Image 1 (cartoon, helix red, strand yellow):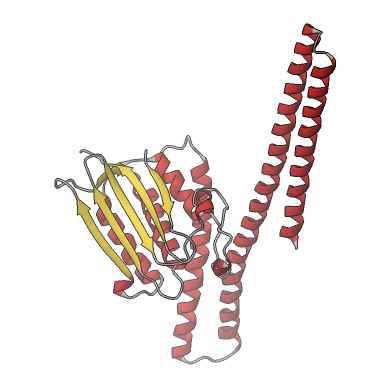
Image 2: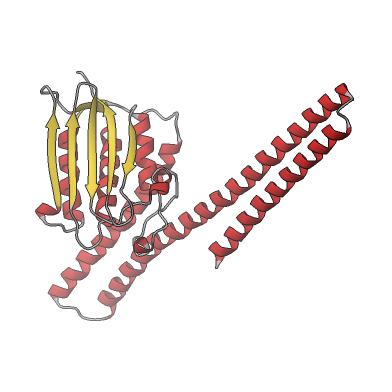
Length: 301
């Protein structure tokens, strides 16, 4: 209901802006017709109306952009609230159960395992928000060292397998290089680990019930490239560039059950740019999987 109301508001401002621009154009044409013999008046009138039209266009686009930004911000607040509230409520329930009744050792261990899992979920949400805040600070300085990128990716894959309780073949890993070049990059270890983990987590979350993710690190004379390909729900072509915006989430019915903050790919893009690289996504469409590519400059050291 709220989304429908906002769309109506956006449509209203678009129609209003287009109407005002059309009116300004009509007045401008009328002014030219009435004063075509008066050179100075004609010139001043054209300049005035051109400025008026430009102002109306800028004002309308600004209003629409702000409405969409507020909508994304509200969606982010709702998502974060859910991501924080759900595990806290779960942990509280288990603790109340342990406090109020006798529980056998097997069930107690299961409760502990579930509470630890919920704690990891809480920690992950908090880290995402903190990383997004750091990504917005463009002037922040980060210590950089030489990193064996292929080994870092391998570590992240093992961590994701454990976190999501995946079989060994759910994540396939391949390392390729041309002319014997090493996958060496100069960067911040924690930042790059965050970027790789976000890409892997996204691929797993959006794969559905059957997780088949192919991870490939390739190296040439200039770049080290990480490709993460899944066979999941896919992304509509018109949304491929938007998914890297802050708070943006793909509007797909199949993704309604997938929870998140809309910050993961924004953080990946920020980290890539900070390291002189880039990230982009490719998809043949809905239901045809997605390939996300992270490209970083290769260190020659």
